Image (cartoon, rainbow, N blue to C red):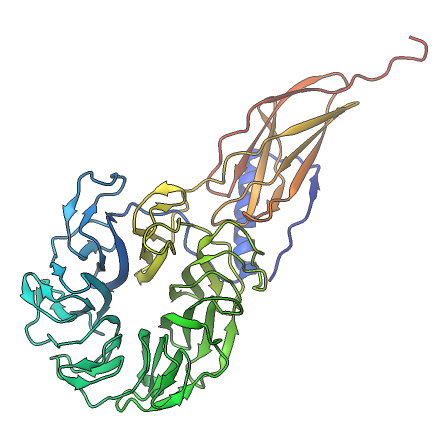
Length: 510
């Protein structure tokens, strides 16, 4: 259901008990109307890195982070404070966020880890990037470790000629994608398949430019591949293709899904659909998200937000994404061109509508694109990237969000103006907004007593003007304040506003 905000005028009173009940019902009804519950927008305490986090993976209660960094530091610590050495790889408890002792040093060549993926049973973590040493020993951009003991495996050490940017596992196959042209001396142009013990499999496909993302759909007879390419297996195929999981032959192409100057940066799937995030350059590009059906490769929906999408992850009917969206005007529930960039979004998987979930980061370091990678760990969403703030507070390169509790109050209370009249006072203000609740309740106090509790839907880009007409004794003086509630949290009250109602006119001639 789509909702429109409008100028609203309220004349109502309520007791505190009725207010709380109404707020709870309003919150529930909005969620039901929109069809999906989102996570909260309140970040959990999370460790930080001193550089970019390019990839995250989850296995058996542990989050693994790979990227281009030298050190990590605790939540709340400033750069240079309480730092712990972690060279391009770190591990954290997925629930508590605690830094774990699992550590290995990845260095040399491009000096970066770009891809992480756990085996289907979570017992092995595959690590790719562009490095020539692991813990001082020779390596060539791809290794694996046993997650139980955080020990490097000796049997998976393929020699990869350049960057590994994507890893996917399916059954007993490990797919690598990236910039490379050979693996173990065999020609493998931008994509390869290996056995768990590192043997190169017969799977062969020829892509002319880098692979950025892979998601396996072997239950549907394919592996879906995204990237920068324009040619696959000798045919013109742009940015997205489905390959046979054993041979590498082209199974499906997706003509006209993506324009020439857009590439695929992220792929994910659930039981029914696959999802992609795209990045474009120049005019007439596509920067948003696409949902496609796994069974028949039909387009389900395609949003039109501008601001390159770097990461997508589906969870319980919602597609969460990391981007730097600045114009979602053609997407249901979205906003028009705006100077403010919104770095996290949530689409309804059912119909692409943007849901009311607006935690945010800044652009940060490197290319100033903000989030680069996202993964679900149980019911906690972890995100990594190049950002240095989250919800306007210092936090570098890692953050996470849970299903609850909702701990963030609406933004600062509104500035209230008043127009006195005979036996009345009209209060006016602009609606506040909240990062994860669309409908807010405004607690209006006269002389410290709650006299009204109107509700209003609002977003950061659409904050309607509101008003309340209070009937009082002519000539009486009163002090008004307003607080804002999201049903669970209440903002501080506004600055007190003292107002005198106009006195009634005396008899004629007096």
